[in-house]
Image (cartoon, rainbow, N blue to C red):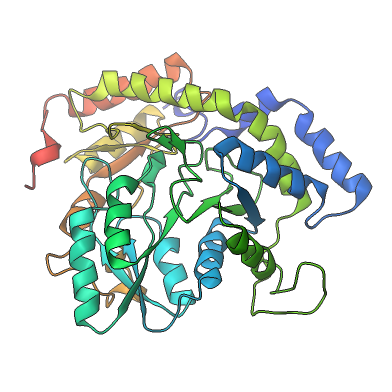
Length: 390
């Protein structure tokens, strides 16, 4: 196989292509931080928080060290802990269940929907009942906006209100998306996001943020991210974390935020082009009515994942699997509670999903290669996977 062919698509998420559009702006922003020397919570952090809040319409943005801490800080701010049940989808990255354990609470898995990959509200209702039967106090639900589309917060809020549940949106993959005209960051009591480099809005290292419209909650978050210190005093008032954002990362994110609106539009165009070319041979992702996505991943469903992955490797098309197993199959979480009906959809998806290259700078030629490769690998089979395991 020729070197040119194996490098037909340089990377699954091509950050180098984005860097070309940024030019030397990032270097100049980093240089400014080096000159003033306020490397932690410097002026760039303050400005980033202001701009992020304005971007999504939230009253407050509190930055932190990473997206996992963003979730944990929200749980800590509400005092979620021992005896409390925290409901999390079983098909997502491990951080969502991890933070419930770190907070001292009891995680309870919830199944997901096959069409949107997001939390299933009927399974949530069943999981709440199971938690109560086990003597736990239902306290919090953490929907995940998987692959960039918001979860069904309309339905989730109704259940949360009926059971007095706090809603914390895990928007690590969805910042920039919207639901019913409201942007991610305003759809829950707390919204946690991540600036890991591969995210739609990513830095060049770890970073995260929590959004809230509540002044008191924002004040608690500001304290907790900085060892529980008071706003104007050095004394520690609470048990907190060391979860402050570096000024250099904030400076980088400010430059990337300038490109972000245009990149969101480009991501949707790439997703539309994929869907038009692939809908006949695989189950393509779907958006809920009223929802937009930032397409952190473009993830398809196929019964022939191994064959497709092999064909893509041979064609120089990078792929990834998000995620290879439902969370209940991971060793630390095999004993976590689940609804009586189990986690059938999460486990089914984990065996069939595969993600294709997705970023704003994909060329038509790159997408044609991806589409052609998938079509060639799967056209003879043509299965309707949406209902294959009903």
